[in-house]
Length: 322
Ligand SMILES: [Zn+2]
Image (tube, rainbow, N blue to C red; front, top):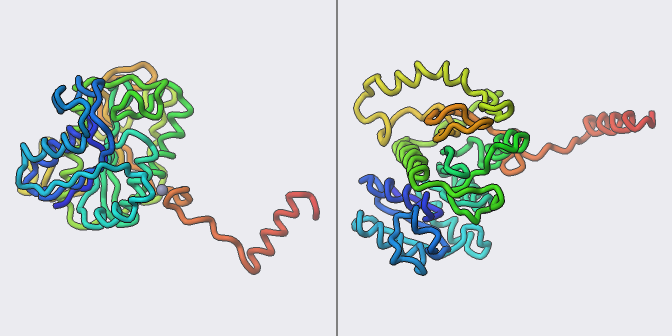
């Protein structure tokens, strides 16, 4: 299996370290433009002696040390670089799964575009500012794109300023003024979840049908706790059965199992007034594909013929011309 990953920061490298140990992984392509900086050291797998070197080089050495048999190819490149899109597209067309551990929105949208064009499944991990929790999102061909998910979540977060921006986990990321670096422990938990979800998707045969276009439970962060207590309660027995019911052999994490019942998994790591009522609580969101998503949606068709006449009449009526 061939993994195409973007990002070897503190989160991305932790995910890569876990995923590459799976014997099904035989090839990895990593895209990472950055140099290892002194402020990266205290929460990164790379040693202090690596400061000043390219993360792509350090990642190559790391992977060779744990999986010398894996064909590892690191590109010192920015995933948004327009000059290299054809090269990225060719590599993505050869991959089985994409793993996005980018720390900025432009890179996430660029990754989404590449994966969607090739029809490949992919995952995205995001640690929330301060390490209070994190997201793991899973994307499949025909399902919601990153634009669908981002617009669905941003609505809630924008309405409630206490909702922190994601950070995976660069203190100089897009939302610098609101971003507090996460601890290595927090990053490791979310990276572990990200790796598990990624490995589970590796085991799936063929694309998963897209989520139905229906209203999802509102994950609004308004009014304090993200109003997920009811879904927690209803999900509790299901959760328990998933944990305690023995699965047929070959199923479950890392095996060929049924697809999880979420597109986005939010996991709290701290109780934070106005955001998370309790620590260590999962919130599963099933986000539908947005019909008129600016990223993946079909444009609203222009009316023609009778429909056009009716639209013109309608518009003139609203202007008071008739
Ligand atoms: Zn979309």
